[in-house]
Length: 128
Image (cartoon, rainbow, N blue to C red; front, top):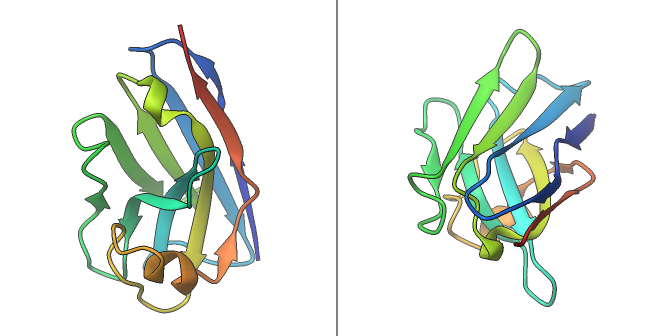
């Protein structure tokens, strides 16, 4: 199983970026999947997740209304559309998946511990 995240970069406050995470060796559709981030000196946190088959997408309060999580089943790829970026969004972003259901995205560290496979992170830097 491989997860390849891309799309990070530098942005100014208010800008948009779209992260992608292409999976191979594993079908994302119907699995627990999520986007996480880790800022310097901070613990990894959940950004947006689908905790299992049929479970609605959930978002961290800090990104609600600004970030949108989607899946393209045909491409076996996750996306995280990030709009109205803020400096506090600066972090390394990771995609992850699990073969079994996981806790809600905001329930850390349990959701982090529950993910089986992680992609290499992609850095997002937001500054003016």
